[in-house]
Image (cartoon, rainbow, N blue to C red; front, side):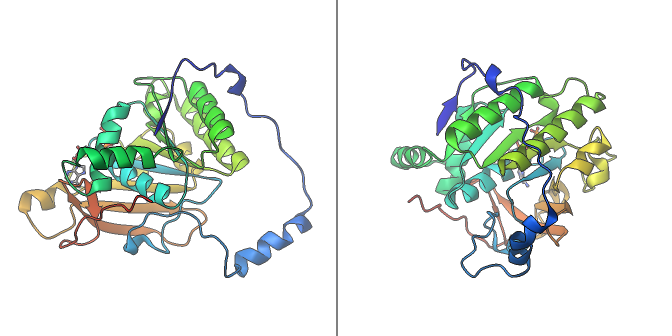
Length: 295
Ligand SMILES: Nc1ncnc2c1ncn2[C@@H]1O[C@H](COP(=O)(O)OP(=O)(O)OP(=O)(O)O)[C@@H](O)[C@H]1O
């Protein structure tokens, strides 16, 4: 893991270089053919490594995924596991979390990678060394201007070849819950950046307070401007099933719901069981946490 510190001068990265081009439709022939008939050796887009998500969810280049949910319902936790899955697949990640200190982030991820609550020191060393050249963390806590976030992302993409960005969360980058124009501008800029640089951006966001935490939210409950959901390519809802926890039933304790997928065919819900010691989301009630193979 490497830190990107605030002492860097990001001024040169404030604006995206203009690269809009009008192209003739015929230039896209090869791309269209390979969309219908992918080559047998074509690389598939990175994805979460749960079997039940296979063929349903992918984190394609040029897209923005919104991860929304109620406070404390596991958005960051699930994304931390997804981040490990992405690194395993050779992706380079930058996490910009304005709510969690880097050491806390690494603590959670170490537990998930180790698949247990107290990883031995040797494992921690191996894990941190393994994460070098795979994981970068922007060391900034608290509110920040969205223009600065964009500059950091451009800097990191140009210097380190980052392919997946996690921005946690939107409301830390835009002042005021009702500043819909700023929310729209920021998300618009994130989409333009993802497309121009062919990277994937994961954006964490909250949902409006509903009548009860026991009712799973949907994309219409997403806080702020409607334009946020309109603009992103994928919208995921992470919901913690506290009712099942209280009742100690066998039902999944966490639900990942895909409410929008512009370039994929699947929408629906996947159930998981949150395993506290490893902080992993397991696919089955009797599932066993998996130790990540750090090669
Ligand atoms: N499904 C679950 N079952 C049990 N505990 C969970 C579940 N999901 C998350 N937790 C616990 O809840 C805590 C909060 O998780 P996390 O920080 O990921 O939530 P969040 O949605 O990102 O919150 P916020 O919106 O406040 O940033 C974690 O410490 C985790 O241990």
